[in-house]
Image (cartoon, rainbow, N blue to C red; front, side, top):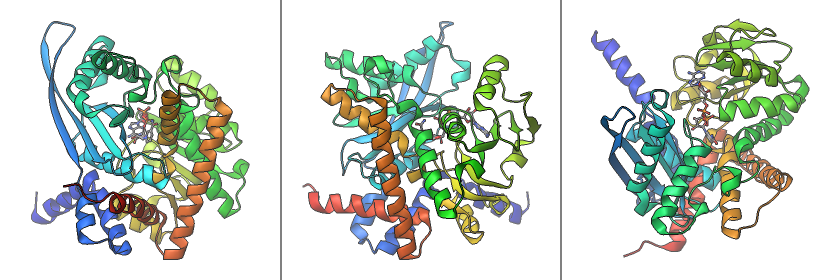
Length: 427
Ligand code: NAD
């Protein structure tokens, strides 16, 4: 590798580091707000980071050790809140970034939580349900002293689900000696879950996309939507958007992409995937190259799979009018600049996918009250929060001459900094 190539790959590696990506936006927002040096230091640093190495007995009798993390970025505005992901490529920097994003996300939509995130390095595709249960329970036991309804409330993220949350809730409850449903959110309905939680992130994406389309004078039935990821967020967004009349023209998955310019039959595509294991080969659509699908001419591009899918290498090829970030961290800071120069209207992740944590907040409230709301009430309250804060972010961006992402960070930082100032620094 020559020096120029090695410098280029180092730069790309830096660009793709989620913690550095978070810091770059944080620094710009802090600078524009004129945040004082001390508070900047406090908010730039996660408040607690836990690394656990957990022994787990595999089904074949072997003993394996898995590494897990829990990072609490801030508890200034309330208990820490954030998901747990199981994936082979989880890193401490990724978990740190996701924890900080949770702090900013909860502050942007003004719910009384701080930010946290957790992860275990493992490949769920290679593990049985019993092995996943043992990993989950031992991980929970190791982080038990720092979690709890008043301390830190985990939730599902990539490769974890309602069942994982039930295991965490049960393990925690066995240790504290009573059933503590409010220790996690995203639980099954029968164990204190909230109606509407499963759909909430995708629904929130749809709600803010609708607001953005209104600004462009585009009706949902004229909006062409491309979605990357057909999992919880992307699958729900696709279902709800199709039901609301949007034309979901392409879905990209890890193993291929499908396209129908007239709009895909989303329930049909779900049934096809269930039957065949893949979205490809769907009779009412054409298989296309996923690398091309991302760059189709469309009104809304909704990345809902993973980080770093829009980078310096491809941002110039984005032909969407609106980029609605369902995933956490799908665009890098370098991509931000290219998208802004090309006039793409970005609904940043910390706002676009905040519907999930908002309904998690409702779940936590319902668990603590022991009184459960109907789905219409959940969706109505979600809509109030998403629409109000979308408007706030976009107006703030206009007023301060910054892009939507920096506006969202500025609003969030300001709220968290204000809480810290009011509380003062202990000791
Ligand atoms: P998920 O595991 O349910 O779905 C992700 C989907 O993306 C999977 O179907 C996977 O096959 C697909 N995928 C992975 N890599 C891909 C690629 N390169 N190209 C196309 N598809 C690919 O996860 P999820 O819960 O839907 O989360 C997706 C993203 O949304 C993550 O960034 C997560 O942090 C974020 N998020 C999730 C929630 C939530 O409530 N679940 C809330 C906020 C943010």
